[in-house]
Length: 118
Image (cartoon, rainbow, N blue to C red; front, side, top):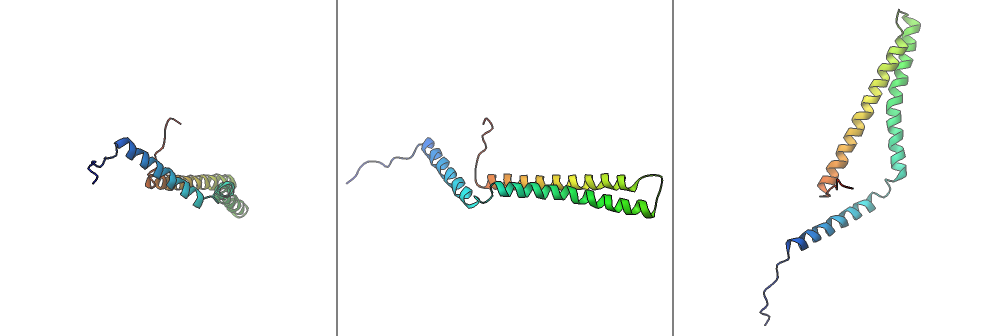
């Protein structure tokens, strides 16, 4: 019979196993999201651009209409152009912040640790 006591793995070996597991999980996730490469990034830049430009142009169009029909001492076009730009920038900022939070949450759920030195 085998009278050797079973050896308990050292803490460093367990840590290594955890590291290998997390790297394997990241590789599998990267393969699943492989389509999110350059085209995904370009699409997101386009989405952000449209979210800024549409409110800006809409504000300018409404301002032009107001200037033609209700002329006053101040320019509605300029005021609503700036208001549309501010709304568009705020909208884009909120969307980017939400996506960044979702990516951070996904990274935290997968157990991935960020190396601050790199």
